[in-house]
Length: 605
View 1 (spheres, rainbow, N blue to C red):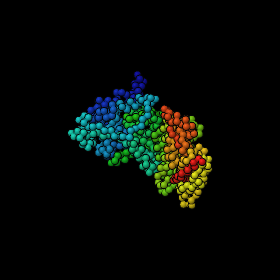
View 2 (cartoon, one colour):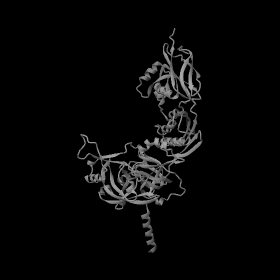
View 3 (cartoon, rainbow, N blue to C red):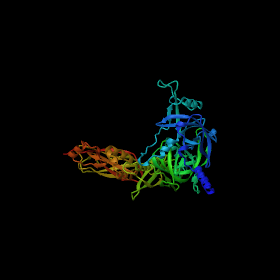
View 4 (cartoon, rainbow, N blue to C red):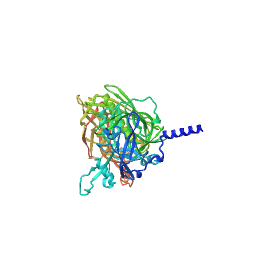
């Protein structure tokens, strides 16, 4: 009998300690009325889960399509001096010891800790999503949820008026002057804890952060050697979504709302709202609360990775403990006044990966090289992807006139092109960028063109001398010979253009726009790897001979009969092609500028 009693007590203890929430422990929105009292759970310091007080102000009905928003006033702990704290997103709220939802929304510059709570039933739906049939959708840039106050319960509106949380519309002829108020709520800003990043790079990324509702904050990242205690990972605990790890790190901090076995829900609002995803999830340690008038924030750092975030939806993020995601190993090698190498990992995401890699490389350059003054950058990017034996390699030289480092966007853009391509899924295995900083004196501009004759005949060789002006040096004359095709029309005009790589690309877009549109994955890779070098002088001889381009392939020498048939084809993908002879002159400088001259084809005698 004694043994059975002990077994029963042990079973009760297991139930009390278990993070599982059963149906009887959840309260539906329809059961909630203004004036109810309850409590919430969150971490204000360290890893200790603390309780704060909650008073229900009311429920906003149909806040979004088929969803409501619970309004609460919070008190206790530091909330009287801090107001709503960034990092509280996901803090579970209980009434009559039943879970009603997660703290998720608030008012900007609010005097009191008035918050919106995402109902738990909406969050639980995220756990039921079948990732195989869900399409990924990016979050809308509009982050403010508004609803006319007139459409809500008058008791709720009066309570909000007492707390000065209604926004008064500008009165117009179409606005009810008796009730011109709207209720505006925004998702609580999510702290983005970064380490190793230059502030200038963070400022340039502020537009991206604002779109996602992230609040960047510099902290010192120290890797913990202790194993994560999952027994303490219960509702109210801090949770981190890691997007960069290593010499540079970045993590978004929130709060755990719900745990059922290894399944978790957090935040009460989206991370980015990409739908089905795979992002590293870890526990987090809160150092302190920084109280600010513009918005208080939890200063926290991620600890050990314990699983992955699998769903990123409007009501919540959902993850699973014990399932892990592969991040992309990255390296930025900087050679210049100082030689430095940065190793880090980035999440594999078509939206985040290119932006985060650019931000990391910018910070590495700013930390290693001077940001003032003109400079050249010899950039080489190696991208290893699955099912391809050799890496995709892009290399070019760029000129930077000042403290921007914006030119690295030109060589990092291929990462976005590969990950967002329409032809096949791409898994990136690794990314390596080598940046060699050169003397800005290695530049030259195109001054003019001189030809040995302006009247030409079919089959003639024309000698061009291109005059270039290197920086702080004497002029140089570079020769190039162009052969006039036999097929040119007598009496026609030939335009010769000498230009830099960027100008040549613009001319190519005008002459053969279809040529620059890849029609399969191999064409995409070819266009990425075979970009024109900024150190080459491009010589383009525009002829009056025309052709067609079809699905990315050029047909420059079609007979007139076939040309007419194809031009009148009832099939799409057929575009005009302006025939050009293109040559390039390799130089030791970065070339800028352009110039043109006309040649005249003699009439037949």
